[in-house]
Image (cartoon, rainbow, N blue to C red; front, side, top):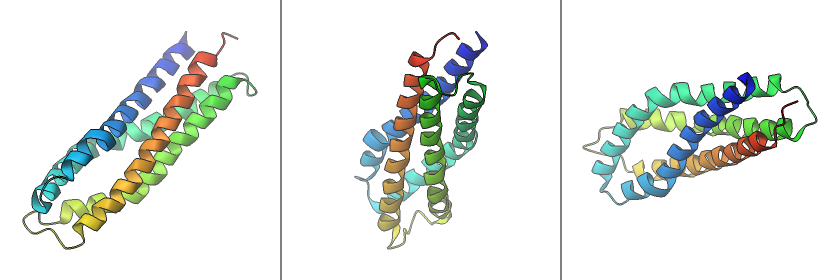
Length: 155
């Protein structure tokens, strides 16, 4: 029963990240791209401030929950272990791409929204590319964790 609760907690954490990531890629960021540069920068600054406090805990906690499941899987050759490993790698990929995004987020917060620099749009397009990659890692990781859950047996 403890293992099922751990799986449920892991899927909950992963689902929160994936839902946020997909929503941002499909809804939030395309809408922001329609704004004038100063309004776009101000909106990005607000989003970045709000996400920072949540993601700084949610992202590593999700990876730690994946690792905990990996290390407590009794059968290393079982499909559940392999899928959990793939899921963990997906969320580690999420952390790696986030490491590229963090300096861009820091710079975004430092800018004057009333006078966005000329390279503002280029910087955001770079961030968007890494964000899409991060979201792809999250979706792949989440799918693998779901497959691990349904393939796990009560051994």
